Length: 611
Ligand code: AMP
Image (tube, rainbow, N blue to C red):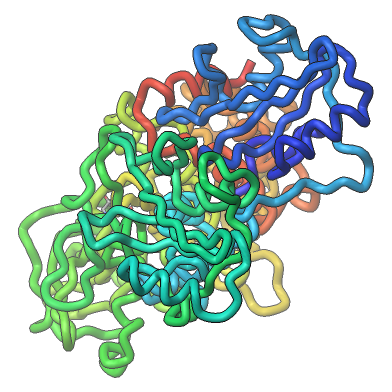
């Protein structure tokens, strides 16, 4: 996840106070000269270092619980950039206003923090071990969940450090520190037997000193009377630079001989466990719309993240046609269409039973409709992605039935219009990012969806979306880049790109156009696109170079992406690989604020909305 300040030329990353002062000296020590650096104490915080009357001033900027940034006692700002902008106009308690940025000299790169350089590997290992994922499922979990997982592991990163010796006694700590050389500053950190607190053991003058590590009510760590830190590894990194009350600073880590390579413990897991056997409960019930502070269910915690056939035992039974006696059909209707209705059900597999949605064809339907449903089944049978509704199989009995994974949250447009007040914009970005991952997968496999719309994005829960309805989809031949329809059908014109309507040409690029319309539906919380216009009016509207307006409260970056999706010429339009990258980097940049309460999200909206 990029640092919220990484684009600022006066941000240096993880440098020490004395290094900051050196840079300020080199830049001339004028009044109001300033730079920004990563805070070594608080996770996600910064320090503003500045000059006034030839003196240095260092102001810690804390990232607050609601995701905003503030200098103690000062106003809150939505990002470090906005904060600096504010203080350039109003000193508001600082020694003077920020007048001149002390930019990084050419050739000086951002200094990564300890955690920055470990983060990617830790996220990967954590996801692999916690959810037992491999291959594509692992890669996609990393892309879609990096910000959430990062938060989980930030608090457990110390367990990966060589200086962490877990639960050993004071005597054993001394034995380990006295073995081999005993330079000043050799140290280790251990968990104390008493109520899970920690202690730091440090060598100085061939003697071992032990320091208790306190944890305050808000969870911050400190040595008694010392500076407070969000995490143990930050405390250690800080004490490497400064003794802060210790007899000596931490210098050389005493390696834990039992440190298991690549091992991560699973603290911080959400409360709903991944179910691999028995009857799978409705994952929606684990995660109602959340309020602040409620634990949240990650897609990998649900039973529909991986295919039910990812278990080799189950794979042995995988066939297109399912046995009727393995299928239990509920009376509950999930939805309906011209073809018939979609019912809730349970499918019995070898080792488990899974909740399913069953598309039941009306018995009086003609052969053409049956053929269409079989075509849809053939397409879905070839797809396997966490962000696409998977087909389990078809069943021919009292009627033809398409058995699919259950996405019990219903269509995205309905969900958003009914929950407008509870769902922050950041949550919409998260879901639309997932849709882009699913569409990128289709693009890679050379499938065109041809009916991407918010009504066809189904939710597993508030934080997990899947693309559905492959009734119009086509698999393209390896060297074809588009599908040409011979005649126009009952088409969703408002979602279609100009080349679909004018030349009947459908490609991943025309799906990108539809993705833009789907984004518009999502950011308007389920409004109908092109309001009162009829299909043909929409075409002339587009031909005139007009586009739908930016939805209220929609981040400017997201409207810009919609406009890119609505590039008239398909050759100039981005593909899903590019769309996914754009929305991902925006999602990561706001992810720090994702899990916060509604107050701050309102502020988000106001700050980031289109002009
Ligand atoms: P469709 O004709 O595929 O658009 O389905 C009609 C309606 O049935 C949808 O809008 C959903 O409400 C419901 N539905 C379809 N597929 C599923 C599914 N896999 N899980 C849950 N509900 C579904």
